[in-house]
Image (tube, rainbow, N blue to C red; front, side, top):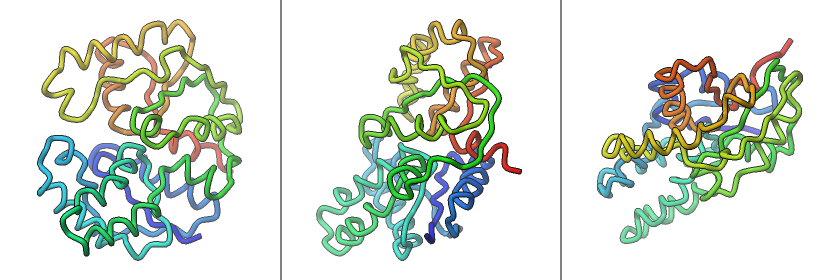
Length: 240
């Protein structure tokens, strides 16, 4: 299958290695991957902050660059969820609403695409360690993604998945929320991390770089040895 990678802003600017890992995973799954450098942002930061005109401008640019794709894969549940809101952004613009409605169903979060579209869970990955999964809010609550990443991790050689009681608890990032309300944001994250180190895990994994940035920063400040890894980084490991 021909697949377009929508790499997302945070991956592009802060964790490009996640984008490279995503390409490796998709190619291992048999996909022909392309990347259009004209893509920019899904518009979510502006959308969540109430700047709808700016969100529409960002969405138009990305729709234009990707709408001819057969399938579009994002290493982010958050940005994938935003594509579902594109049609409502153009409620008063029939032409753009139609284009948004056509492209939104073609946008897939990585784990959902692999498991639910391709029917692929075995990617020849290896990760020697104990991992706890973080269910990011947008993926879990807007897209209903829960079993898919676990099915993929279950096939990783050497990996032991440790389910933590706070796996579904919000990390407190929330985009501008963490900037406007830093004390509350950190308090939410600390509640999430309670008891995690006592499980003996080596890493906490997720499919949203925004959550991983929040978690990774706090772990570093706490002097923790735990790593924060994207699902794609784990799945891309171990190929011979």
